[in-house]
Image (cartoon, rainbow, N blue to C red; front, side, top):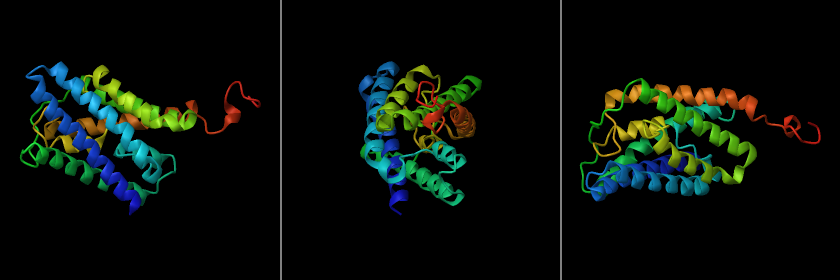
Length: 225
């Protein structure tokens, strides 16, 4: 229960930050989308560092069904636990949207109307999730203490170098379909994003098996290398 609560709480606070900072940034930017995106970006990168640092030792700090799927393929999650992780991540994410709306005196859940679809957007989500998973697995392999900073910095960059602003997370995508704010997505566009995210995550997992081997003996430059 502690593990599942950590995943639910972490995903809720992540989404609350994404949606809430998007609402605040849009209000303060007065129509300047670049300024609004910058505010949204800084808050998201910062909260990821905090949440992974404090909840990583409890649950692994996935907060992301695509990441949990990757750890399932690596034999680090059972099928049953994978299902529970995904369930609490999605519930926590939607709760995060409702919490952000409540703080800004908005309807708790509203269908998103922001259009995000098409080949370039799907490619962007595949690239964003591929890079996120590579960052996590490479960090675990080489710089485990730096994973919170690495993930926070990667998503901060991803907001700006991807056409989709780097959702890179099926639970976050679901949760953002329930907000009609700056950070929202219309529900019909959600499946394309989720599919692209899963493809990107699994591609990264496959490459990481070769690129980040688990034993030091395979590293060039080591005593046995």
